[in-house]
Length: 103
Ligand SMILES: [Zn+2]
Image 1: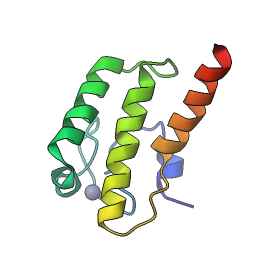
Image 2: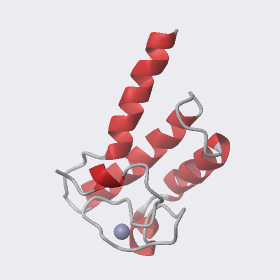
Image 3: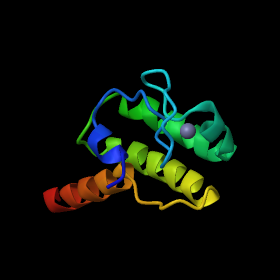
């Protein structure tokens, strides 16, 4: 089971990249090494969607944030040839289904 599973929902004090155990500032997303790997456009998307959802979970605004995080984790995993499965993608898929059901 990926280490990220049990950590979903906790204060983010570990790098979110798959397989990385680097400690980071609470509220940060990835360690400097992994954050630097991301393309500039993806970094902007993560930052912007984080500002937009402003901590609101479970509404439709949260979905772009989860999706941006999932893309970032998947990008790093691909780069490091690690499995791409991650908690952000699973949460995004669940939320997408909830939103579709609510319509
Ligand atoms: Zn890292």
